[in-house]
View 1 (tube, one colour):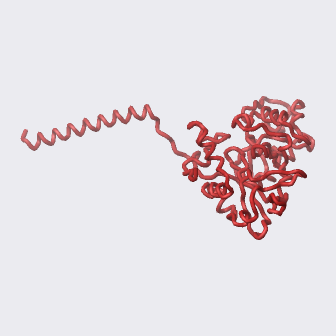
View 2 (cartoon, helix red, strand yellow):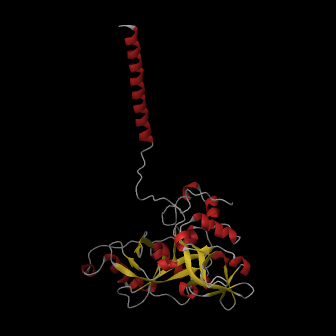
View 3 (cartoon, one colour):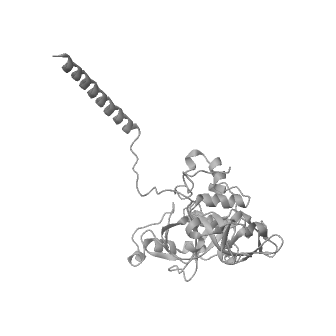
Length: 324
């Protein structure tokens, strides 16, 4: 064999050894780190929110497609700035009573449709007389006399009843899961009381009217109030952090800001701002508040930072949290 042939043989041998080694190494890695399948379950993430008007008036269906009811209103926990309950009307079998369910028991599945989420609630699907003509979930939720205490909405909502509702529907109360304050009865009210209400400034001047709420889809927190009829800005909407809202004697709603500061605030445009995390952070800082999600990301263990209350990706993952 001449010199040239020997060189080519040597190079070929080395190349084969490299390929064999790479294959073995890759196989070892693939066994240790299984490949990740990228699919539609993980959409690009940003500020994920919706307005209360996207809930109210829309239907809630069961996991099997039947209509459980229509969202009439929301119960707001002003202590923690969250939507505590969703109130359903037009519910079958309960004689015109409303049905109160935890916010975490509904999941958005379409532009105008929300689906009941049973959580850890055990719903018997065994054959029964009602199942011939009834959806099993509707039947289970509305045909049990022992459930009657959960039908209707008490005039005064107390923490004991609210806790029972969460436990009954297989959901963990957010105030225990998140380590927040226990909701106060006087701070629980239906959204009807806030929607359209006049808001004033500390000095008594009118600040505008509550037009809507912006709700964080990861955990039901009310991120913003959307104001209309702001003096000097009759044709624009203005969003302010929910934490700026307080109440005073006579149930007057007051914003902790000034007329000048409110007048100079950025306008709110649903199509532009509703899912814009940078805009959300800017609004909080403009009104002198630390964005609550940056506080939570600093405090939460790494394993909890990318998951929302309902197991959904955090709306802020992958975005720079500036201004800390």
